[in-house]
Each structure stands twice: as structure tokens, then as C-alpha cells.
Length: 249
Length: 266
Image (cartoon, one colour):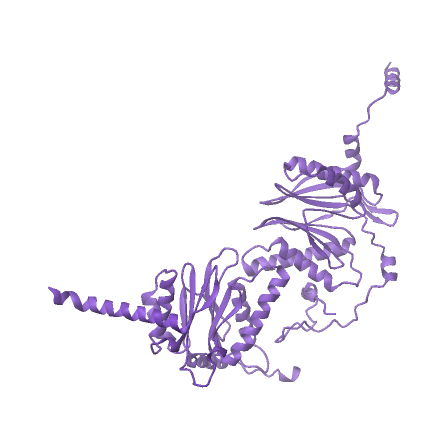
């Protein structure tokens, strides 16, 4: 261990950590992911690259659960994600064992962010190349939360956020259209944000919904297609309403 | 055996607690920790000479203890604080090795405070007792002597746990620990009702300690009674058990003595 202490992540003369910034580049190339927090529902959506024909799509779940009440979606290097997720899952159980209580969303986010930071300040390692969106309900107060972490190890809470490919456009869309929603409305908002940057269709997006009572539920293709159809119909109706009235008079 | 050295971290930073990328414990200390044999235990002779008790009732938790420290047959102190204030809403009781109890309770207080700062909410009594139990378990067999009760009030209401140096941890509503505990249990169990007022519960606790100090040679001094309620703990009383004796069994002057008193006055 002692021989590998030549740090890879070192400061540049103007105060940048280039390895961390390159890691952020890797995130920007990863698939799009969006998270929206409602009053009683939290939705995670991830872009799915068109399924390679022979691949079993069920083995590439991009939205995973860390515990009964916490879920995570990420953008970036999937192999790094696997390692981070495993450590987070162990920490969730370890916390249950040592204090007989489930973790809060903030706690596990802090843990994951702390882990990501450690790898920016240790010898012989590179930072994790992924940003995560962590959602869940507080086990006592039942308050929903959405957090985001990034390769530098910073984290913060969000009402809605996006990461990965074209995250800026998704975030702009969310900023324009975000309002306090619940239930189906929250899911629609998340899907609409994703559809801004992803080809329409149930087979290109993966959506999971978390509620306090039922925990994490992955929507299947049919359900997603149904919602997408609803959204398209609403969009068409809105377009028609804009063009309609002048002609009627 | 993997040792939970988190209790020693602040005092010994050179135990390689720096670059930890793998979730393993830091390197072992440079000396080999001794395993306690029967010889060691006999030499130290921590006969848990004390009486402490705690019980949950309608209004919260009542905690009481005596204040005698004994080394074999020698009473080394009559004024030991056996109820340790971990933080404003949690108390711990001391039975066994005084140094062990004091150190680990203080350490627990530090851990509880750090938990509060990191998580922006108080630690539960369940969590605090589990932290202590895990530490004591990792030192199992090395000669620690701790028989403690963790009493507190958290979001779920009043909580009471018994934790000992064998690594045991029990949740309960009534506990008494120490050499005087059988006597205390007798009074406590026969007088206990869930629906007691704070004064009634305090009187029950006081009487139980008193009776234990009366019969057990290793218990005595001052009977302290603490109450833990929704706003934290409060010390209710600290009565010398010698005085309590005359309070419960006042000396009634008999006729012969009265005559002698009159004669002396005349």
C-alpha cells in the first residue's frame, strides 16, 4: 500500500483538480438521468440506449435500490457505479446494525459523497467517474428527498435535477416547468424532461417511482408507453389550443 | 478478534487511521492486548459492589443509585457519582469497575454528540445503547467490568437498556444492577405500578435503594434519584441512607427513656 502513494489527483497551478474535471467529462458522456421530487412521490428516470438485440435488458437495471426506502440512479462509468453501490448497500445495513435504525437519505448521500471525495485525495487511485441521484423517504418524518453527488464529492439536495448527457437542457426544462406535484403528475414531469433529450418511446427510457408505502417500483414498458402517449396527447392538445381559437372567430 | 478501536481514536492518532480506502479497521496497536484469565479477574476483584436501579413508568424513567465504593472489605468512598450524565436527556448508571464505567460513558457521550452534529438529530436510546454494547463486546474477555443501564427519552418516548461488559444488551422496563440488586428488586417489584406519579415513583426508587443499602454491605452512602422526562433528566434527591433509615423507622421513645429524660430535666 505504501508504494502507491504518488497521488494522481494533484492541484494545477490555477487551483483545478484536473482528474476530477475529467471525471465530470466522463459523466457528461454518460446516459441522461433525471430525478423529480413530489410531495408524496419521487421519480427517477434514465435513458436506455436502444437495446442491443441479444442482450437481456433485465440485467442492466440502471435504477437500483440501496435499501427498502432509498434508490439511486447514476450517470457515468457503470463499473465504478457497481462498486459504489455495493459499498453504499453495505453501509445501509451496517447502520441498521449499529444503531438499529434505517439510514436517512442525507446520511447515505453523505457517505457516498465522502467515498467519492476520498478517492480524490488518496494515493494511486483515480476518482469515481459518476454522478449519482439519490432519492428516498426519511424513515421517521416521511419527508421525500432528492440528492445529487458528483465525482468531486460534493452533494446537495434538489427539488428536481438531471445529470449525464444533455443534462443542461433537461435542467432548463425542469426550471421552466417545475411545480409542486404529486403522484402521476410527478411521473409525467420526469418523463417530459427526459423526452426533451431522448427519442420518444417506452423502450428508450427506464422509469422508477418511489412512494412511502410501496417503496421502489420500476415501471414496465407498457406503463411508460401509456404515459408517453398521454404526454403526447397533452402536448398536441396544447398546440391545438394555441392555434385553435383565432380560426374559430 | 477485530477490536472496535473507535473509542481510542482521538487519543492515539498514530495507529494508522489515515489512508483508509478499504472498509477495514486500522492497524492493530503496537502492543499485544492481554486476554483476561481467571487470575486477572480474581486480582482485580471488581465485585460490582453497588446498587443501581432504573424503571420506566407512565411519566418517564426513574433512575436511582447508591454512592459507596468498596475494595474488598474497605469502604474507599461514600460519595461516588454512580449516575453518569451522558447528555442532557440520557443517563447511564455505574456498576463494576468505576474507571471503566466512567471512561466508556464519557466516550459514549462524545459519540452521541458527534452523531447529533453529523445527522442534525439526537441519537435514540436504542442507538446509544447499541454503540456502547458493540464497543464492550469487542473488548470481551479483556477484563472490562461494566454493568450499566442506559436510560433516556427520545423521539419514541422513554427508553431503558441494560448493557454489560460480557456484551449483553437487554431492552426492558425494570432493571437493578449490582450486589444489592436482589434486595432492591424485592422492594421495586412489589411496589411497582405503571401508573405512578413522579413523586410516587421517586419514593419507590428511594426506598428500594435504601433497603438494598441496609442489607448489602457493599452498598451505602447517599441514595440519589434522577428522573428522565420529555425535557431531559433532573436530579430529584440525594439522601444519606443513614438518615433515610430514621425517616422510615423513627425511634419512638419508650416509657423508661421518657422517665429518665424527665429526671434529667428536673
